[in-house]
Image 1 (spheres, helix red, strand yellow):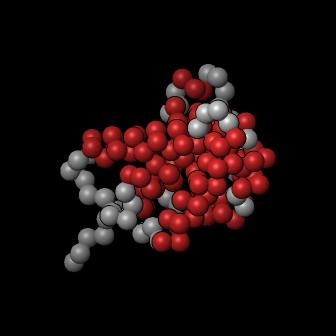
Image 2 (cartoon, one colour):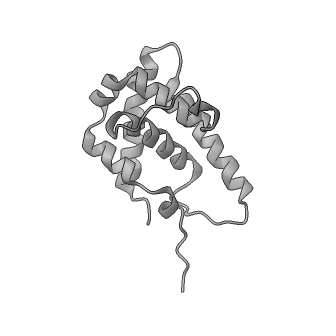
Image 3 (tube, one colour):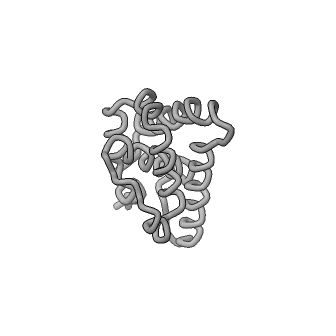
Length: 136
């Protein structure tokens, strides 16, 4: 599965809207910080698997943006249960941060993102997006 230009644009657009709506009205850059940490995690993951090829159109920047958007939108639109305090010991920090953003700003997120846009982003499968087509 290749990431299409429309999907890439949607991910960038949705995350941009969330940054403008949340980060620009707060003293902290919640969405931006989440995106940066997801990017760093993806870079670290890819460096660890340095012998593996990744598709050119699905680099670590767009992967980090996808993870950030998917997690936030999942809590708001898919009714993914928020983690408990005990859960936070075993979950990725970025996942917990996304849950906190969704819990603090659900109305803002719903105003900025349609259910259809959220469904498209949430349906993107990382495993399929990183598959490299082998030329015969």
